Image 1 (cartoon, helix red, strand yellow):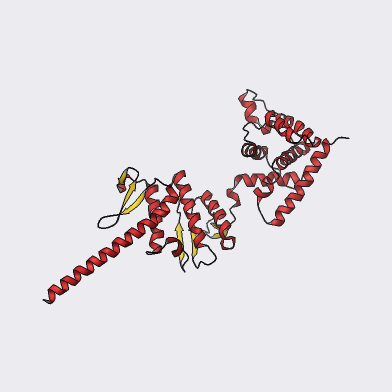
Image 2 (tube, rainbow, N blue to C red):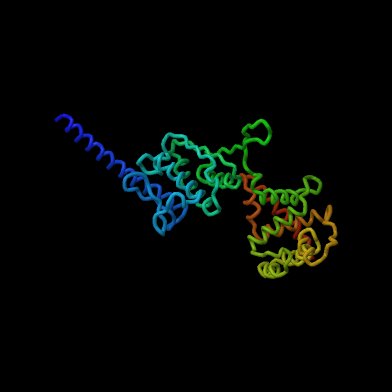
Length: 340
């Protein structure tokens, strides 16, 4: 009689546990699917609870066996499951604010561009909860991916700049950690800073950038600010002249600036070699080269006044200092073209 009662209780307990596990799996699947939607968007893979245990993966064609998932998809699922596990049956966002240390070891490894973008968006979304002012959580991210490190730096800095600390493993044999601001990753910014410093300084006071650096920042600026591929094309300059018809100095400057690009072979040597001119004259030197760099920076400042100042970043004082120097440079360059 007692054995029957025990068996009956055991059966009820098993049913209760099974019911709890089923509810937990339903809740966890919902939480994980919220994160999967951020990574893949609507129509990507989702989870549904299995009939007796675990989960099944579903896409727009139906169930997907684990062997049919890419390594990237498996890693995304693992990452989302990790955050769901931290939540322990509560909302993931709320759970991330508790007193805990969250360590992410190379979270974007083995991803293609699309999935890497989605995971970066997911992390930036979750970090808003981890790094909020009322959060007690701590976050450590380790990665070998320089571009991802820079993305995370920008994202975290925008959320809570006081919480950001960046470190790099030294390249020597000491294997020590060194404080880093990751400036070396942003190649365009580095080259722009070199050319800017050269342009606003006296010749001989600072390192001279090579013509390739000037050409690359010039090409990037023309492409992304004006949508122009040919860096020595008269067409965009003629259009720009119309916008500055009330300023005779700028009009004259633009008319001289374009021939300067043609004459300086270093700015467009590809065009020359493709046209069969394999005997290239030397780049401009000394005062002429310095003036060429000054004109490039002046042009950029005229067309997009905030581009250099904000692209180089820094404190408010740094920005004010750059604006002052760029204003002086602009007037010095344009004064040569004023009406007598």
